[in-house]
Length: 403
Image (cartoon, rainbow, N blue to C red):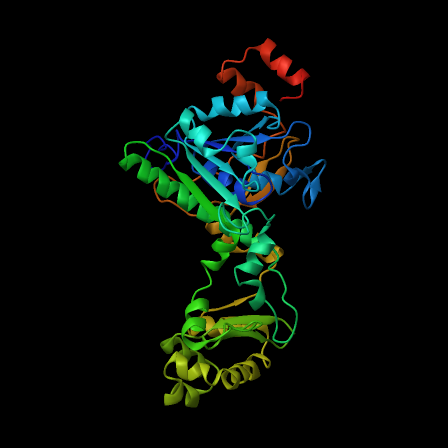
């Protein structure tokens, strides 16, 4: 630190998290805890590990995504279908704070690892359960990935150009939203535990509910007006103007001119002071009634100019605008660099890999990127030795494929 004082502890130092999830939602939650100092003990099936190790682009036999999703974690291999593997989990739970799982409801109970059993061992345990449809209700037993949660949550219906089939967002948004709500729920439960004498609880996160929770006024509009919001393409329906507009070279600019004062500045910037001063457009509801007209006026101006000129003019006018970033734009952008959002880690073979930085940013106790994701079972010996398994016992478990 610049003041010469030693660095402060990471804010979640001392917190112990067992991660039993696979792929996206559970591991994303574990990643977030690990970035702020929690010890993450990730349990993986022996021999194969988390399937994410082989998802998307590979570097040798390991996914590049793995080094983002699994940084700051310890990998322990356990066969949870075997009684000995289940017993090791119970021993891990004794001094754990949080256990994260994203299996289909009932799976933990089938392994004798449900909340009743685990809380009897550790009453302070917080069990975070992420599933497609939640732990209760008529759909609880259905398999559900993030894409299904996006659909049932109401998002997928809106992600299309009018009259065309819905398209997916290019990332697993439903899973990531579920993970973030899981982290929020766990932190709230930790706060409650500190106030209620140390008793833990279950945090039940459904992917479809995590999507539905961000759908803004979708339900109230239907309830009061009978309105079924329709796909809006690049526009934000009911908030005007907020859309994407073509520039001279065929690229698009995103313009959010929907604030009342911002709208006036935008209209003057495009040479339409008449629209800036038109009383019909003073507030959003009036502008929305003429959204097509206003979009056409803005588009007529952007089509005559290259993207960079449009951006420069709107920046001078203090109108929110931006280009559509590719990952190449992100990797070379000075603002990303200045904010520490592009960091480099060293891979096991010695190469360097750029990865996303930490969100959110804390002023006094910022999080850590750390190193790459662990090798499969890299920390099994360490953790089992901590639990009292000597070398002979560990070798026996390995010979029987328990670890």
